[in-house]
Image (cartoon, rainbow, N blue to C red; front, side, top):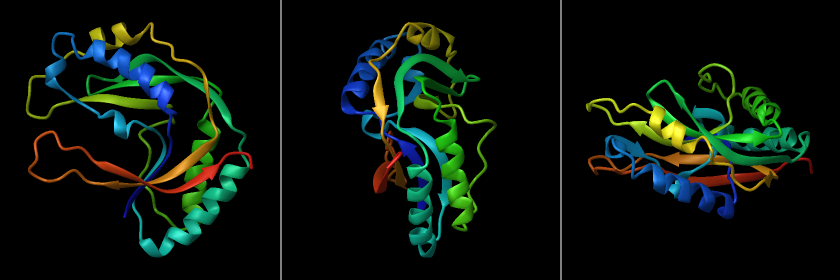
Length: 189
């Protein structure tokens, strides 16, 4: 099964971000991007990739233990950024989720999960859009500039979730992955 560990923002925070994203979708070139669906918005702490189902009990146990060692984090969705001209994202301001991300990766390793390496240092973000393959690239700077003033209402990230990713339906244009929470692990409890 394909798994990752994430923080899911509350509905009110997602609604604020959705309003900002609606304005981005009206910008020139927006139709050249593949926008993520609000139902799938999350902040990935650790991408684990394919995990043998036999490792799931140990993974859950270690992830719960790791989560208990980290206090809840007070954060807000805010500002925009990009990874090159490939990915547009909204960032998180507030308490650092880096410790929780490192603990999640360590828990997975200790449970025997050989997870995929992160691309560089952990950077808390929520992916909004990606370049469409096979199309002329859209410059992302106007989108990050427009999102630069966005600052959502603070909220408390009180848990991490182990999430299963179901791939999009093959051959269906615009199909997106579907996510299923396998376990919710409260922080600091």
